[in-house]
Image (cartoon, rainbow, N blue to C red; front, side, top):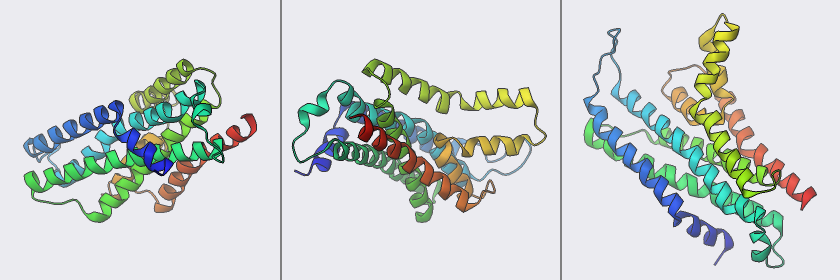
Length: 259
């Protein structure tokens, strides 16, 4: 069997992957069921589009789980193996370490992308069942592409850090720190900074801070699609290329000069 297909099958059938996928689907199902119950009028009296609310909810839910899954894929299927010398035992000539790195990177990104696609399809089913609308195909395509970008960043950053730290424990600790800083507490940190420097245009400052955080890439993409914010498509594409290419390129460089 092709090494990439073998690793992809192994990753998708792993307990950690299945557990996170189940949680994603369960939370998505709950949102899909209860979103219909949400009032259509805000406190200010403005009508809230259920479609926009639903699409935003998808981005927020997956914005939590995709980074976790990407970090775990990078840790379990490259970082941990490298730091425990398992990679040396699976190397068979003429396969090189660079080829293994790229193979594990591709597998990690594909696995996370598959999880995102499955969840979006399920959410679309709920949209059809409870709100009588189907997500536009171009929105689905742009959102899936955004999640592949996020997956590429988080898998790549774990592979990169595996060439920096010395032990699996240190790598796992960094995994937790990265998730907490970029996903869980990022907004709070930004708000503290805003309070400290008191900028004249807070909304612009917040938007700029989200664009430079790969965790929010899919959310920005969904906002651009629903026209809730005004961001250049070129800016979004440029950010996506940076998040996709830079981490794995640095990992390849470190892997070449250190291994």
